[in-house]
Image 1: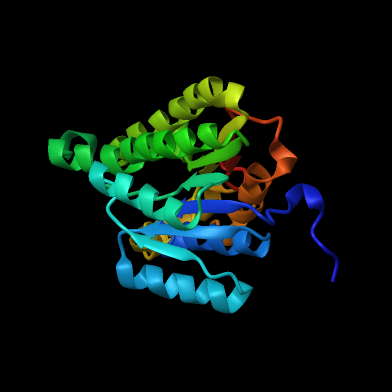
Image 2: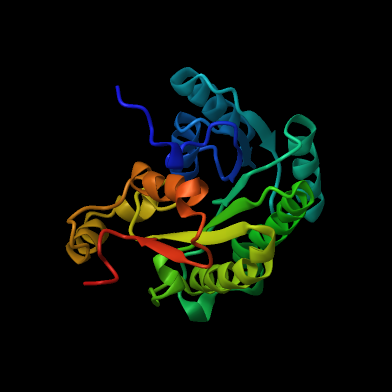
Length: 258
């Protein structure tokens, strides 16, 4: 079997992934481990996170550090970063993947629902990135911060106004962090999935009419799977993207271009 090109190797690196218990997060974690990275897995789902860590170990031989916590709680964020640094003094790559949504018409969203989406999707990514970036700056070796944005960072979608607001914020946050952290050789980018089949969207795609509508909009003719985003993450986490920062890479099967 051919070895991975050195530009894409993550051997000797440490990657932290939030929302890593399932879906896109778990898919990313497996690919990062396969590229040689040590892993720190973050999720609020304790039992599913333990199972994800076991699954990764069986498939890749890497033994991840699994840390359970609520990204909506600032004290939990501090604790999780502290626990991560107890095993891994240096974090080379942070992937802000954890997310939530509320599917309701704009005129029906409550302040509580809006706050929950913004806190998990945007505020948590902001302050976890802040804490990890401080460690990267102190280590003086640069680093990578990758956040999962969305096609709703660019387009309006029915019943996803709060989610779209949070992901539009990720687009702007990626640009702002990239400029401020560039002097420290920290590259900040995002990936924006389109119609993907994950735990978060499972209820939507169980409706045949909605699923057929979505597939009809995608030039490649299918919904995305967690592994479809893996190559983009490897690229942005590795030395192959060392001169790329402030970008949002759209991974949508061509939907936005259609």
